[in-house]
Image 1 (spheres, rainbow, N blue to C red):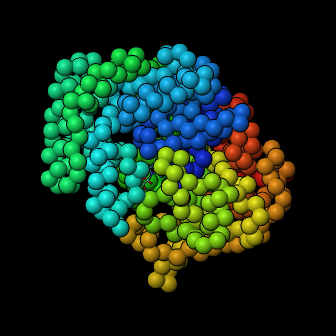
Image 2: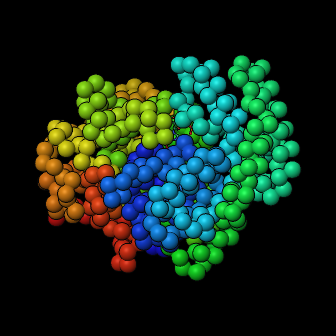
Image 3: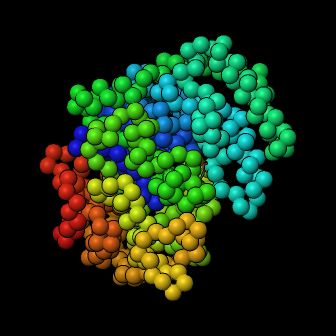
Amino acid sequence: MKTLAVVGSQWGDEGKGKIVDLLAADADIVVRFQGGNNAAHTLVVNGERFVLRLVPAGALYQGKICVIANGTVVDPIALLDEITELKRRGHLKDDELLKLSSEAHMVMPYHRAIDRAREARLGKSAIGTTGFGIGPAYEDKMARVGLRFDDLADFDAFAQKLQRNIRDKNAYLKTVLKAKPVAAAPLVSQMRAVRSRLLRYVCDTSRFLQEAIASGKRVLFEGAHGIMLDIDHGTYPFVTSSNCGVSAVFSGCGIAPNSLDGVLGISKAYATRVGGGPFPTEISGRLADMMREEGNEFGSATGRPRRIGWFDAVLTRHAVRLNGMWRIALTKLDVLTGLDPVKICVAYQIRGRTLDQVPDSHLLGKVKPVYESLPGWSESISSARSLSDLPVNARRYLQRLQELCGVGLAMVGVGASREATIVVDNPFHDGSDNSNNIAVTNG
Ligand code: IMP
């Protein structure tokens, strides 16, 4: 494949960062196409830990081009902070290596203020957002009052729009949300001060990507969040405010569907979610605490403890169908080591009926999972580099996941570092098998 999209199959935090980082070794260009700094990809490279929120994972390799495309919403100050930190650690040395779409929208402090005030007002029914202003920024985009990086070209016009927005948002913050307004003058000055630092990255990323694809470059599209947080297909309203599936690649980058060769789904060997909303396979108590500790399941962006559950094959099948996934990269298999049995949700039950597909949203919170229990394994698997290095019960678990999800595995993560991965089939390597062949485990 030359062009590949990586998409989360669950509620985000599937470990996409690590897989994208691994695939980026063979890509020329890595692209973020939706979301904002509500996403955070944690990567461990040569023992060094990096948390990337806006800049694509390609930044950790020398010479790869990173694109933040038009479908994203970007907090300009957070972006500059991230760039500064990456430069300090020896990355993104050349400004040409980062391209920011002139059509991407900005997240402003009033978006964050609105996000947080609304969540506080919702109390127990809060969505559990990251509080980074993502929803309100996408609202402004759709309401056609958003500020785009393109607007920075004429700063006076930009400042006028910014002041208009601050006026409107402050009225809403004060009267409806009973929250503190945002000061206009310091924000305008701050934007004036950072304008030129931002403009050096701003360009027409749609044309850049079209030309790159036409010239045969390898392009990796790095999804954020997961399909169950998708604004249309996720567990609405407990979702993020963008499309998180493969469809977002095309609108979010300005490229045509026939320029994408394949979609790799990413899934954890179990499931997690942060924030509110239905989670059919959620578990609690000592087992959940152990898995949370073992898997370091605390939000990279917010530090919140993640909710924990067993692998849900019903949801994963849904994710595979919605996105036309070629294969799945399964992460964090090592976290299941020592558990016996390991469980997989194979269907749901509701009102005496068994469902093998995801029901309408209003029912998902009420279903009971039907589990299949498989024997666990106790041997450490972190040094496994091929499927045949795994204990037989771990291989059985993988085989069963593939059968239930109807899709093969491309990779299996067995530890946090880039190297701790079993690569079954790298889509960027010649000879990669583009068929949906699931028989890959018995080594
Ligand atoms: P927002 O994207 O900050 O508006 O949050 C909406 C929902 O999406 C909340 O449940 C968040 O916890 C969730 N969410 C947003 N980004 C991520 C992510 O990167 N990983 C996991 N959950 C996320």
